[in-house]
Figure 1 (tube, rainbow, N blue to C red):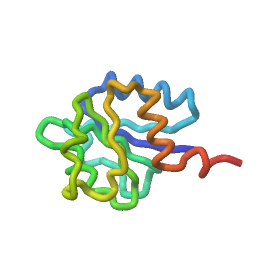
Figure 2: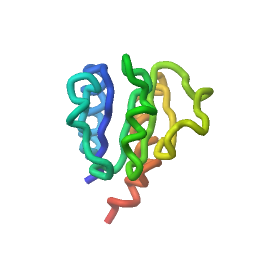
Figure 3: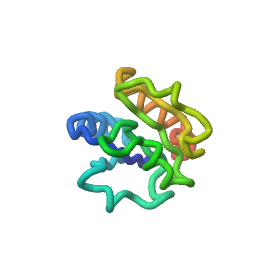
Figure 4: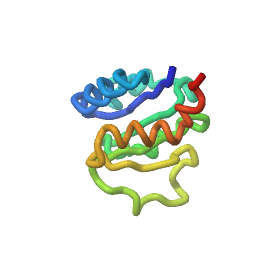
Length: 121
């Protein structure tokens, strides 16, 4: 089964994305960076990570740095593409604005993680 995790401080957004992921046979686990920081998954435990860029005192690239084996898609309500530079960890493969929609975010996670190809029969 395809497996993703998301680090986001908006529980409503996480719930909406989880409902869509479930309909598409994708296992999605939500983590709040404030309450769940010490229980974030291990590197390589999931196929793809979705990490919100703006997390209060932290920014997504700081959390992404914990993951060298897990491809990361950064997401945000703001456009942070211009901030993408050589300081971002190599695991960050893409950036998607939340305004592009939930389906767009899941589609990008599938593309980055080759999920359809890895789990097809």
